[in-house]
Length: 598
Ligand code: NAP
Image (cartoon, rainbow, N blue to C red):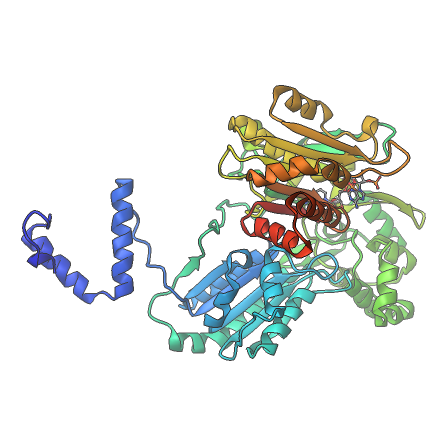
């Protein structure tokens, strides 16, 4: 006890020492340890730290999320907030930061996980997903679990990851205490109901084992959500200031450099983040559909809690570009269209039918008398599209730049444009208003140490975040070396940001620039060919601690680049297949191998 320490060792007055002893007597060992850390931090910083509640070692309800684009993270945060609101101890953890072996210590668990590509888990979920299927997975008899999956029903393996997680946990002995939800892109409408119902089940059980305090504890390494008043639910109405075509006149691609002003908002971003963009459907296409269905665009309809005209809702709020199965079902049933109803019964045929079409095409092919509200109810709400940010605030101040590849194809007597890319790349003019928000991406970040070398692989519009990285590193006068691999069809037509990149090469900011113009010679040449040609140097950079980044096409490019990297590690490091895979897995674990791929 402090009172009994000799004078000189005890710096407190006798009164303070008595009060201190009294306080210590009321504290548990965990609380004493926390206070000791708190006082040490205060002494080091020189200023009193805010007295945050102590971190509870094992929070009774764990909310684990595996997110690709941020949606699962948002839903998981909503669960944590709702649980906290009910007075539950809750711990919110990104699967990327979760030690799988900890699973056996959990008692109550909710999992929120998305599925992407061909039924694959998000990168951040891979480790836990694989662990659960491995021999190392422990018995989980005491675990109570509820799973919420996010996905896109246009894809064949809708919400597969969530289903797999639930099945694997159950096979290990966990009890599923609330039916899983497998939610489509309009998950916002359904998630709150599921969260409520799931927490109704968890609450009494969690409370019975919980201690008094109720905290949302973020695991170390997970940045607290960024605070801006503008969010996905409440975006900022920004102004487009520049739209500039950056592919040549004879290019087969139309890529636009788009600049948007964030002036008047409190929105900020870090390089690596994405911008969520709500677009407007083409007024011309909407009018053509209204005509085909003999509908009056000025008819009033309700959407959410708002009343609008049908035309306004079709332009601003409803998905008309990406076709999806539930539309065929709902519109078929609302109109009694036998062909659509039959098609909806066979998932494979339905997907083949939807794949080349937009909603506009289906409406033109199946025109019916339908009440304005019934049409609205058969459509789903427009979802924002995410673009990797192509600028650094350090360089462009209150602007945000995007690299937009315009999606365009002719079919069924119409020219089709991608929803957001057609809007931003073709229809938006200077002064166009656009609703935007920033989607934080902590899994695609420059190294904290500016001296660390980076290798960036970004063919096509995958160059976007690397333009931002380079701007950031230049502004910070970072000493680390920068190596960029870029590819596109033709040197003369498709060298995106050529002048800037060559300027960076000249100034020395870019240490190396390797390009692969795939169609400038008889055989195709891709970025992975350049990686293999430079195997020795790539290996040397990795061994020196370089961080590795890939952005762009997920389905083909990112997989092929990964194979090339495996070859480099095998050949240069003298590793076999297994050791090479483990080497790259370790890089991923150490956040030295990061991908932003779609
Ligand atoms: P792209 O289609 O990826 O083409 C860029 C270059 O890559 C072309 O030279 C192409 O060659 C080549 N390529 C084709 N197959 C390849 C493979 N298996 N491995 C390596 N290179 C290959 O470029 P893009 O039109 O700009 O589209 C980029 C893609 O990435 C899109 O799918 C887009 O959705 C996605 N993306 C996502 C983000 C994001 O926000 N995270 C950002 C950028 C891009 P050939 O065409 O001559 O075969």
